[in-house]
Image (cartoon, rainbow, N blue to C red):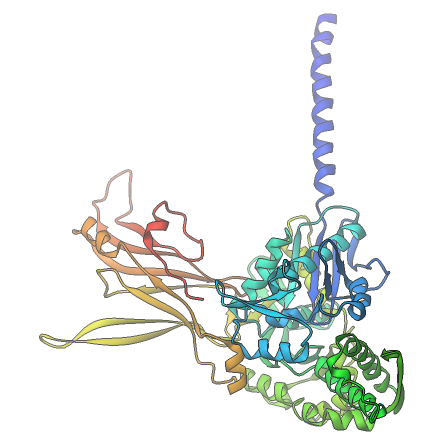
Length: 602
């Protein structure tokens, strides 16, 4: 018996050692369970986290504030972010970058590049011949692309989240404007890769807001469809979204709440920033008038003074939202001269009269895309800081014809909270109550190709074909397969945006190229030579519009069929042979991918 006990003791030690290893692995796993979201606005960002024991919480920055300015100051050996960078904007305006998201995915000749240069003339933008885009030229030795600057901001947001969570974080959901096209979305993904973040999803900020609203009102959602309109006017742009909430039956979890994006309208340049710039221009004019006859320089030629005026204009806009008038004052604005001037709300509204006329535009666009009327909308809810301007609310209330506007949502943090809920749902570390999200395609995508047809014996002509891949306001994520039936040789096809007639002329110029890429297929003829006795079922191209709204071509294959005899071991009478002949955007897995020749066009 003693011998038996001695034989068991080593096993017991081994068991305890295994338990210790497993506990250590679990503890290590728990240290990486946290996920984060970044609501990336034009002016400021909100970061939220979820970790075990901490359900959905907004991250406080180093100044214990819930939102952080999206500002970067770049020096030769130093970088400043957030509030620290904002304080540096006065001392070093050329090296302090803000609103750079407006340049993401834009070529140098895009109207928004010229607009940015006009708004912020202190920044030197240089041409990048390789990418046909622009760089920020900080000094002779220092230049950065907008994507690199955004990567720095995202890395800073991760450091804030990690300090708050007290553990490393890699997984994130990032919000983007719903009007971002493929180039702009890929630019954000590129910036996230530079920051070392694993992006679980790029979620549209309007969808994140709608998700937050639905999650906290789950009990109010039933089988009767409820149509809610969200009007979001932020610093840089305005978006109007129509969302339908309803309980639906799912295969996995039975009856669950669902939100469906039904209609979207937007104005890329209507926001608080444009109001502040007009106020800044007004203040600059008043200051020049006060110094008239003193042979003083125009204050507009002094970047530091203009940075001070922009900061004061921001404060003035906020104060005038609650007061009829206010005194603007800046000590030592320029040449040690103080500035003081009274500005009334009436003056402010006159300065921005044409902007307020544009307020109903996104509402009409959203209704048209949803094919709905205002009578079908149950409530209009305000989101975004610029909706606090009284005149905006007055014009909007008149446009929607409701008794009142809904203000029962946190206008600043709703998108961040919705995005972090989605991050928890996508992460394998957390289990959340299901909430079905059906987002909608804003820009339709189609495939165009030309093939030879025989109209009469011996007479051939070329026929141009278009096939819609993803229709406007159709749901995504979604996969599609297009079959090319009449090709037995190498050919090309184009992936383009579809009908963009809902955009105005200026928006079309800002949108940029409508060609996404040109795909050149090689090996089609060889596949037919390889299987001469098989029946061709066409060339099949597999497309994927993923959760981030990013399009990829997973694979292209030539499919053949042949009949085989029944056998006792194999009951199947049909065998398909797939020959992968092309891949795009790195989606292919075959060793021949490099030889298949896909040509991407920016």
